[in-house]
Image 1 (cartoon, one colour):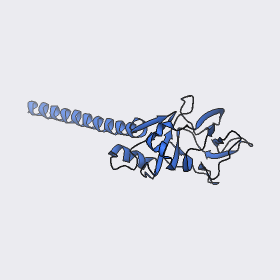
Image 2 (tube, helix red, strand yellow):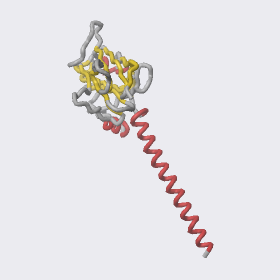
Image 3 (cartoon, one colour):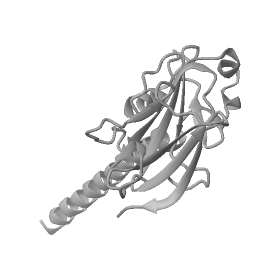
Length: 206
């Protein structure tokens, strides 16, 4: 009887160890997939801190690319129709933060229409009653040197901070630059884009 009891305990121990190993394997698989989708699994080329996915909208897009598109709310048209550039870093290679203020400057890209939109770390738009979600070629203010300039800032910023895109909460954020009907030269070589400049102006709210 004692031998049977020890055998049963050994069997239970082995089962628990196998279950623990299986659980760890599943969690590691999910974590690696999420990291691949949200951080490194983006097939494409860089233009400064911005990365453009060359497979978005393509029939050659793999499962990770499709998942990334779903998470970050891209319409995923073919790049002959649309190019999507994304970044979560500023020009100093620091992570973009929802609680901080950034100045953005760009020369209007060679495309029929463009827009820059901010997304929270979860892939959703920042809630804002004034609907300050994005800046586009239709409403951007272009200065004398031909650059569109605007601020991305928290809703709780001090008076006088004119945010064209309003954020809320804390944590990371991501910007997406959409180019609709880009010029042929950009279609052929998306990395030649003059990338939008993103500078943290030092103001962050707690």
